[in-house]
Image 1 (cartoon, one colour):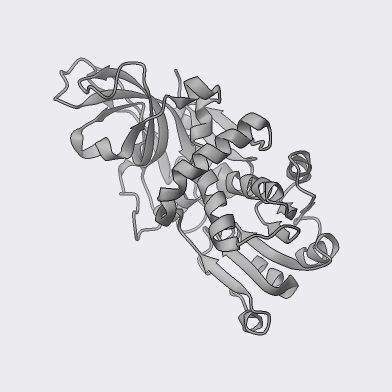
Image 2: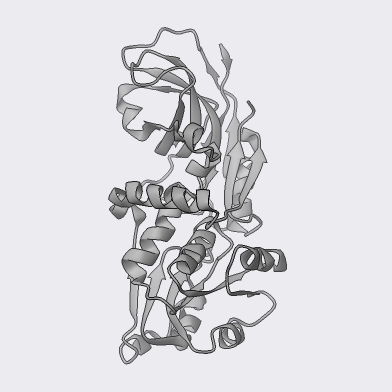
Length: 341
């Protein structure tokens, strides 16, 4: 028997998540020598993804985490033992949606649908972490949102809020590849500089400049496409700056996830004369676009057209704190936690 620590959802939060209160790392054990049934295999977790939507899963409703059970999501693991012809020892495996956040996982037949081989990083030379960040569902979210719902045209103005997040940084850079002028906002001067460094035309710190004034200064000719990662009153301000035929892509609302009462938008009537379209979407409806996205993004990465930042914490015990960091905006780009190897 060996130690198999797990990240447990211990209490439903009513406001901000508190590390050690709502999420805890508990000790467990697993017998790595137990014979595997047919098609089973054993994984050692290398890295897990930390995402804002995890906060929504702590609030009940669809796909909610279960109290006193391990949380799950997206993982990168290595096969350490196998009785499955398709998964050999040493293979890298991507866990999606229901992959448990624990040090070791036995994949049984009923769990197999959530795991896929992911050895391509060995051939492309891209780090395996990229499959949880820029080449993962977050990257696809940026791609789907902008292309499927933003309907971008060259020379249009794209404004991205939460632009230094995993999704935001990718949405902005795809916008540049498509010939858009791109402005982003973020919550620190360090993040603003990062956005400029990766090719945004301009960026500003919404904590030091009023959003209305910031948009007036940096988007003087109005906004054609708004990629919304924060929700709340930001949408209201953007509507006031939107051009006729503007598109608002509602991707996330991280500013609202910990609020007991959500901020309202009071100027929706302006959508009518301005012919503004506001679209909410879930990337899960467009997973068929993943092969197309993976091919294009891999090419962009290898050509140096896309840059991405990953904030990586070390040790399973850092998972609760890492989620708090994401929800409070401390990270830049994609937040990951690398487990002890």
